[in-house]
Amino acid sequence: MLKDNSKSPVVPHLLPMIMLGILFFIFGLVSWVNSILIPYFKVACELTHTQSYFVALAFYIAYLVMSIPAAKLIGHIGSKKGIITGLWLMAVGTLLFVPAAYTRAYPIFLTGLSILQTVANPYVTILGPIESAARRISIMGLCNKVAGILAPLLFAAIILRNSDTILFETLKSGNLSVIDKEPLLNELIQRVITPYTVLSVFLFLFGCLVHFIRLPELGNEKEEKGSIPSENGHRSIGSFPYLVLGVFAIFFHVAAQVISIDTIISYAESMGFNLHEAKIFPSLTLTCALLGYFLGILLIPRFASQQQLFRLCTIGGLILSLCVLFIPGSIEIYGHDTSLSILCLSLMGVCNALIYAGIWPLAIHDLGKWTNLGSSFMVMALCGNAFMPVIYGLIADNYGLRIGYVVLIPCFLYLIFYAFYGYKLNHWSELWKLRKDK
Image (cartoon, rainbow, N blue to C red; front, side, top):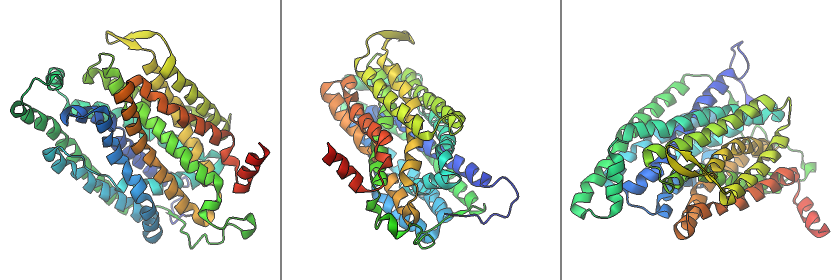
């Protein structure tokens, strides 16, 4: 699977792990900033809750559209050139915020992120024994979530002003005329130009750096042809039920994760917090995710298997989802009477961290020549980040923000199914046999 061209005597795959850590930091930096970008755009572009979550849809829809082309591109040019191409496409994508800031329109950006994800996740999985893959993914998760903690805080420090609380309330009041409102809205949205221009330059330079670093290549389909014996009964990518079911598991997992992070600021604002105060909650949720990743690194595989922790976290996620909906009581935070449900939403970060790390190695093991294509399907499933927040927004607009979290329940029910049974299915006949027995 992995061709190591390096002649260095250092620890095997140390350099690729460092490079992947930086890539996952970048994923976190550009992804989790949405947690503050969504409520910021909600004010600056005068959006409903549903409309504001189209920010997430525009961001993550690239996974659905680009993952298969990304897999074909990587198979043609190799994983190293794929990383460089992905970084440079991301650099171009971030620059789209400059014209978007002047038109106050949504950009469909960062399609290069899907190329990087298609390379990075299987890279981490096969860069060592499959039994400890969740541990390596947990290490990458630490890099991702540290960036996620910093992203909304840094973004808020750059674009928010002390006087914005009064400005936001004035804009929301509806008392301003169109003539008075337009320059204020334009000034708000154009604040994103500087941070995204700097990010674009950084991504381009990092892509240049990767060009000069020796990295092992992922095996391509031709090299692995015949790696799965015909007697196993697998004739196509669709004949692996644990992969197909794993794709849906990723879809529902990332949907639950992004809802718990990208909606939490709006939920806090409904309790009286302003945007300056509420910006801490996404970082709190991601800090809980850091705790989950630390547990994964410490426990897998020495004290617990990745399957055991995966199962425990899916059950924990379902319990916390029910608590978000139904737990009574409140606590005072920043002088606000705050529902305990928001703390349950933050604690979901612990469970979500190890769910992602659990799904990947279970879903793409022993795919042989179909590994790249299987990985691209898994990356396509990240479009759950695009669609489920919009569904949450529709429910929230009509029935209330807290009721909107009912969408978490089916997500975790499916994850429990996959963690306890779905990942073990090697042939579809096993599933049909179970249904007949019932």
